[in-house]
Image (cartoon, rainbow, N blue to C red):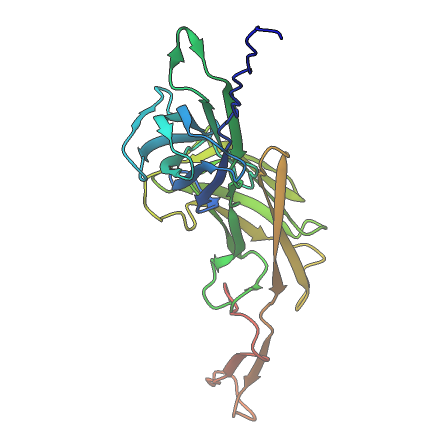
Length: 347
């Protein structure tokens, strides 16, 4: 008989648990923007279904690209510390703990800067969360660091628009787009530049055969608009080229962009062989502007002029059938238009 005492091992089984967080939502409104507009980002951080523990030492960072600046934030789900960086490019929310099954929501507002250009796309922000499995550190040992990220929907910037057409002429009696030889004709290029920055170039194609000649050009800018150079004009018998360099419509919080750049063009109808009665000629304007990072985009508008001229008839009549020397004879002279064309001047 063995008097030794038998022992049974005392076994404890531990299950390792770990939080698993996800940035479940990063939304932004609106997504179609212009400079000066404020957009709102909303975010949510929550536990995945696979998460088995509370998350600790959370640092949630919302970051925006260079064309945006964060102006305000709100930790709407529950109070926590947050800080907007000195360069306004990020906001940081700090949470000590996110209990299993709960979520954290917040928002931040960002203003679109004047550096955006028409047609720009792909302006994306992001949210990143860092957290660990243990609050602070125990006996000098920290928990396991974990993280999650998500990007926002992209913002896009609307492009500018323009109108080109006949404004008026020096002879008030010609109707609409009718023009007479020697008449001055006024065109206007009206550009709507949304708040932001864009290259501004306009080319006006004149009809061939020397039918129109450039006389003068002028520029009008609305108060918030500035350009890097004065109106540069290059004129020839076939084209008039305008270049304003880069123009900026400074954000002012007012919806006042309509036709904030106007280029006025004066041409004269020349006494050219091609300018015959009822002939037409097309004047075409092409507007070039910045298109995101892809270079320049363009748009074209046409206007058609029709040449008219006065067609006068004359007559002379006297009721006197015969006369002697020294008699006074009265003649009636008539001048009139044949059809409706244009006024005769210097008759």
